[in-house]
Amino acid sequence: MTFGDHRTDSGIEIDALYDGTNLDGFDSASKLGAPGQYPYTRGVYPNMYRGKLWTMRQYAGFGSAKATNERFKFLLKAGQTGLSCAFDLPTQMGYDSDHPRAFGEVGKVGVAIDSIEDMRDLLDGLPLDRVTTSMTINSTASILLLLYQLVAEEAGIESSKLGGTIQNDILKEYVARGTYIFPPRPSMRIITDIFAYCNEHMPAWNTISISGYHIREAGSTAVQEIAFTIANAIAYVEAAITAGLEVDEFAPRLSFFWNAHNNLFEEVAKFRASRRIWADIMRNQFEAKDPKSQLLRFHTQTGGSTLTAQQPQVNLVRVAIQALSAVLGGTQSLHTNGFDEALGLPTQQAAKLALRTQQVIGYESGVTDTVDPLAGSYFVESLTNEVESMALEYLAKIAEMGGAIAAIENGYMQDEIEQAAYDYARSIDSKAKIIVGVNEFVEEEEVATEVFPIDPALQEEQCERVAKLRADRDNSAVKERLSELYSAAKGDANLMYPMKAALRANATLGEVSDTLRSVFGIYIPRG
Image (cartoon, rainbow, N blue to C red; front, side, top):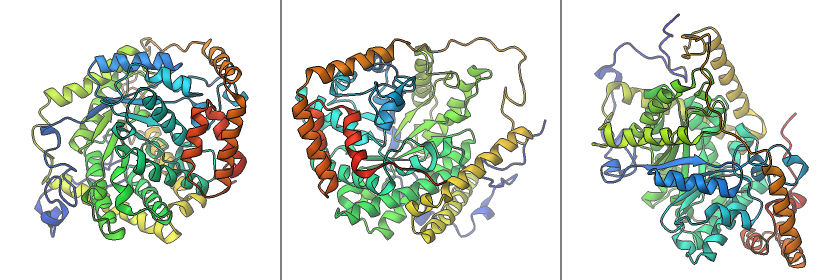
């Protein structure tokens, strides 16, 4: 067994000792500043967690809307302070539950949402005017956002009072995850339509959560995670400006979504460096005047790909370390994974333990008593500088290619991630990197762990539900609303308005998606 070569996951070599010589020429006034002030290295708010802890937003979603609603209420009762919803693959890909491509996937990795009826069940009895909701949805983000708004309106809640986030980050889907529908350029049109719509009707809603999480899950390094994500963010800002929006109209509602892995200090450095890079880009490249436009506010989720099926209880320790890195790095909200998620969806017990992990850090550890407690550390500041420098090199290279969309279309980001994933796998195989329970400290016999059950009758029930909806609704009205959406998509009108009218008339998610497919086509990746 070896003890590694003292490099971070991004390949940064770590010295045995750090002192003042590692920070020669370091100007703390310009590189750090004060918390809540440019360049926001030390945090986006002056008091950070001294006044209010981060939002504890546990990810949930499985099976039917009613079942997920019950899990939401369980987590709120256990002390969760925000909602976070996962959707099944058919919902993510714009297919109704009775579509042939949905077979075997309904309710598996998230909740099935086919129509406004499902959204009503999902949100039943929840205080939408007092709790914020995050929805991990991309290609169909516009549809889910409008369904959420429609149900809130039915409950008499003003849209201006709705708070939450849609992920809505389609570029990373082409890079890392694959739940895309349309080609990049019409997808960017939908995103900028959302920006404009929310600026007018839902000003408290975060219109996009630009996600490094799935880039990291695909195998990227920490440096690649922030570099590629910020490159995508630049593309979104450019697209919105091209569409006629002023930067300070939409930029304050941009948010980010980072992963947290096991190398605690590199993760802390990554979070701090990302804030500094983004603040500089927004102030100097895009000339944003509103300080809120310069803030990199982010949600963090602990690393799903770091969890092991072997000795799954050990994942509790991994998750605690990862969550600590997010808090020390200044996250605005946090999801902690269940220890059993390498085996299936989290059981209720695992979900509660994951939430309790956050609560122990927040209320018992003392790390929230002062803002940015690691600031000024020779090691942490040196590592933050190194992560920043390497990320800026990637950003410069992507800019030379013509930006993120061009880099995605020619496969650059995908190739870089694939190589990083390969290198990481080799390091485990060679034992240059030790994974407890996998390549060292292995147990011959594993203790059986409870696995979350999936109801096999769910798909049939969901298919019957959507069939009944189609039979009971005014189909002529649905056809007319979908025709209006088709015409809008052929032109240049904001798509959110005809889409909302169609959904209000009981058009399904699949029908709305099919209407847009008929105009925009589908994306087929390179060879």
